[in-house]
Image (cartoon, rainbow, N blue to C red; front, side, top):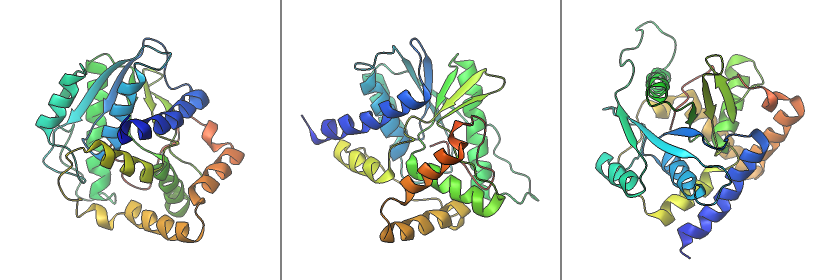
Length: 255
């Protein structure tokens, strides 16, 4: 067994935990996985493909990739992604962003509008390819960052949800990596040797999310379980039982 296989085993345990808690999948679901080609979305697509052979639910996986000139960080090349999907019989759907123009007077930062246009395009794609379930690669660090952003900038104790029903139940948005920490994804990506290339978006370095990420990183140097503590607090407050709350403070990258 390779190191990637060993790490996948442990990551799948966290993914299965999310399934037990939130019932993300049902037998026969058609799932569109939002794949930017970055480390998070590639890990999610890889794990869900592995789970097809071990999980009790029969899932039909589709990959959705938004083709855009702007990149939010390192990602695999599109030809490599197409070949990777073809080798695993995963249909790959491509589409441009829904709208590349943002309101000039909007107080939102560019990251918000970039993520918004990608997300809208994925919503439209899911409907077009008849996938009721749309899976994003947000992980436990994203959940913690969103919680702190909402508290600091919006005055709300809310967070990302692992499962959200949108458009009167016509679309189910899920985050199967909600219990997976970013450091474990990095280890898996290195072991899997994905050919990531590119540089982070310069706009993103100045975003609120980037600031909050630095705050949490500093906090973790003093208390290793900061993210778990935040998660436990949200559970006690009952906020993780809500299905509709999403971040209002900044960009929510669909990964």
